[in-house]
Each structure stands twice: as C-alpha cells, then as structure tokens.
Image (cartoon, rainbow, N blue to C red; front, side, top):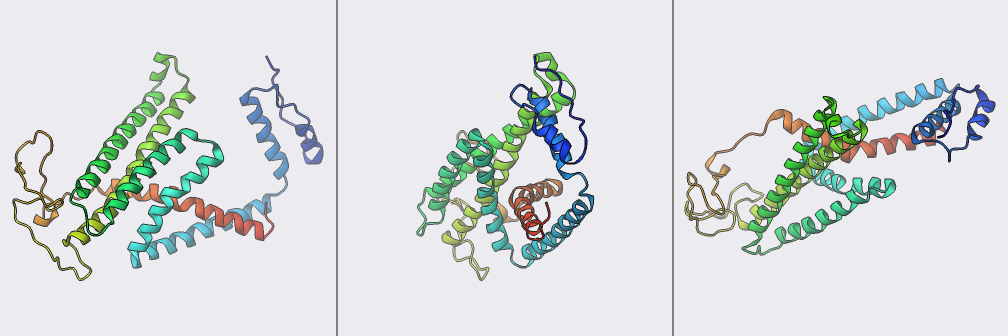
Length: 293
C-alpha cells in the first residue's frame, strides 16, 4: 500500500519543484488528484488580480452572449433553431473523442446514421407515401427509450442520495456516476430527437401541402383520411387500436400545451450543450490574446 502523501508545501518555485518531484506511479487515484490539485494552487499562487480580471471577462462574455442569443432567437427563430440543432448534434462529438467516451461515441454514431437517413427521406420531393410513418415510428421509439433511460437514471440518483445503493454493496460514486450518465443520455437524446422530429414534420407538412410560406394550405382531406400519410383511417379517435391508435391533431384545434417548466428545462439543456462550450472557447481566446493564464 502506498504511503499517504502530504501535499502541503511551501510557496513559490520551491513548492512547485517539491510537487514535481512526487512519483505519481505509486499513488492511488485519490492521492494523484490531491497532488494535481496542489500543483494547480502552487502554480497560480499570487495571481489573484489576474484571476479577478478573468472572472470579469467571463461574466461580461456570458451576459453579452446571452443577449445576442435572445435577440437572434426572437428575430430569426428558424436559423437559430437550425444552428442550435447542429450544435447539439456535433459539439458532444468533440468531447467524446477528446475524453475517450467510446460508449457514447458508438451510440451517437448509430443514432446519427439512422436519424440522417430518416431526415433525408423526410426532406425528399415528392414525398414517398411510407415516409411519414417511418418518421413517426423512429422518433417515437427514441422518445420511449430516452424517457425510460431518464427515469432509470433519476431513480438511481435518488436511491444513491438516500443510501439505498449500500443495500447492493455499490459504492456511492459508482452509483451516482451510473445515474447521472443515464439521466444525461435520456435528456440529451430526448431533446435531440424532439428537435429533429419537429424539423422533419415541418418539411413533410410543406411538401404534402398542409403548410406554405403564405400561410394558406394547398391541400385538404376528409375526416376519414389520415392527414399525415394520406391513407384511410380504420380506427376512430375514441377507439383503442390493436396495432396503432388514431390521434386528433391541431388541425381541429385540439392541442396540449407543453409544461412551462419542461420547456425551460429543454431550453437550458440546449444552451448547456450547444452554446456553453462556444462561449467558454471565446472566453479562453480573449484570455489568450490578453496574455492571461
């Protein structure tokens, strides 16, 4: 067993040399973290004024970026949503490769491949008759998987907070990592499939003729025909179907408004994944230009 490492050292260059001489190979992960933490403090000791300036730059950049994003979203919502969706899709790929999260990378590749194919089918003109059903089936499947994954992750986090993980002899850090990972998977792919589904629905509605730039639809269907795929409806709205159910959409002014807090949660997640890394990158670029470390 490795001896406990004392990390309290003197200040200045002498303290940094003492930490640099510590052999990390014989230390436990906790002791390695302590040494790295001490090295960071020794390196930045005496830079309080510089750190205060960096904090001010960070706060100012966050405020300006938030104002710009809000104005962009209000004035040009379509381009904002498209860029945010692209950021949501691509930004995690950088951190996945950098941090070697191979499990997330495999799932991301599978999701991206199938979603790209479904999106390609949804944006073709003329629209194939089976495409709306394909879009519906795929994104409904992802929704159910994301919902179940998020619920399991939330339960794992709560069980860990109440100490129930000890009944199964699971370490708290392992149980918490498992719960947070599942919760992130559920929220991330849930938001991503929701945004892709809305984009595909808009394209298909415009192609079919239920939507146009002028706001006037160019196609009307009877009540016995499905407004999505154009096929005959065999199951009434009030009846329970064996394979599929029939739902009445907003064409008859029946629409369930999403919960306000849930919508704010989705917006916060989009901001965290899509724009927060970009803002942090801008802050680091400003610090680099000004010579701040």
